[in-house]
Length: 129
Length: 193
Image (tube, rainbow over the protein chains, first blue to last red):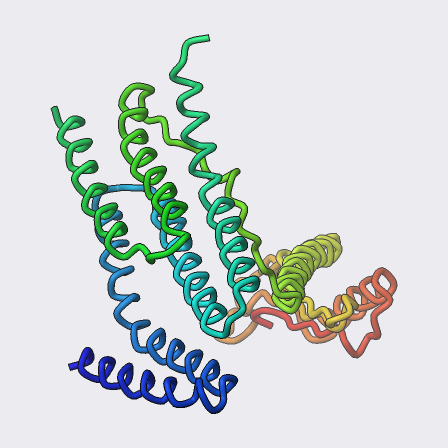
């Protein structure tokens, strides 16, 4: 049971963080980062399985893989941005967290741009001149 | 009907995929941005088959909008260049070899006693002619039989060694002068002699 491991690990980390935040706040941040990395690496295999299934479904539906690939990239950027922002907020660095979120938003917008342009071009073609 | 069935099937798949994306969206300030991108994904996935149907086999072109930077390793480029270079050199060498073989054979065929020539040339890595190997077939002589002198091994119609040596010397001399090759590197064999 992986969830039991994760819950156990989360409880231990929370307890340690409660103690460390009083004594050594820097170590608390380090522990928080380590915990995030552990959870992320534990979920990597599962995420790969999800992506495989998605790929298979879109292949069968004959949907251009570019769209799914872009969506997955956007999801990845969003998750990483959220993780990083949360860690920064935990460390009390609100300004840095905001910057990470800003960067994530821009990257998401850039990734979504090709799809948006493609839609606009198609719609323009539909409208008679 | 089959087109409609395909579009409906696509829409069902898109809805399932999009719903799944909605579930796994991260909570936080980035959520509206990701939802917007998911919305675009749904829109284009629905629009694509519909447009393909209206404008017979039209596909939405997105390649030119693909902004992903492609990282190309310098070593990879060099290795590809080297492979290409080797391939060009190999082909060039093969073409030169073929031409040279043809030329040398043609020169040898100028001798009236020679009927056919097979030439093989060896070229060094720096493109220099290294060795020439020739198999020469001489014209068979007309047999003259005088009624009382027919022996079992009397005459097979081939040239004797002296004649062969004479032709060999001449061919070697011509090839030597034409290609500046040392006589030791020109090897001639007589077929059936």
